[in-house]
Amino acid sequence: MDKKVVITGASKGIGKALAIRFALEGYYVAVCSRDENNLKALADEIKSMGTRYPLFYSVCNVRKREDITAFYDKVKKEFGAIDILVNNAGIFLPGQIMNEEGGVFEEVMSVNVASAYHFTRLFAKGMMERKSGHIFNMCSVASIKAYPNGGSYCISKFALLGMTKVLREEMKEHNIKVTAVLPGATYTDSWSGTGLPEERFIPAEDIANTIFQISKLSPRTNVEEILLRPQLGDI
Image (cartoon, rainbow, N blue to C red; front, side):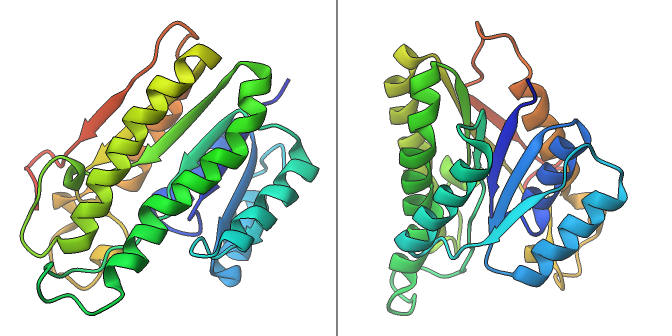
């Protein structure tokens, strides 16, 4: 039976690379983001590659619980239970705790932590019923190392890694794998305009390939955390 994967925040960057990789491998792929134009462009790009199944996509603002629930309902109707969930949606707003604008903390936590919490609570139900599945949470090097101007972003990534560890313990008995992915600087739109050479960054495709390969391991093995850094070191 062909497997089904859900990827949040998938219209560009790592999420887009993941959608393309899984689609090319013959998976049913469902994605969401706030940008309908980017989602449609991704669906057209995947279709042009001659993949087995078309991309299923839906607009979803992960800051809103009702949007998360609506997306879940659509995917459940289309696919039923899924095999893999990648909580990839995220936002980076630079700043420091003492000088960030009001509301930054709440916004970053809602996107980077709360959305993963709510998506997991919904999609893991089917996994628990079938006693199989794999959940990937897109953490960061910032989950283990605070850095200047990281502010609420660093806080959120530390929190997401903590949530992933808790989830891993809770899901063991249900035979569901949980993996924290901790990438360093990855070449995405977030770094556009910095003037830094592309060679200083991890290609988004490398993150996608790594996650795909981890998902193919035997049921007896779980990769709890994986840390990826640019070859020349952190930026």
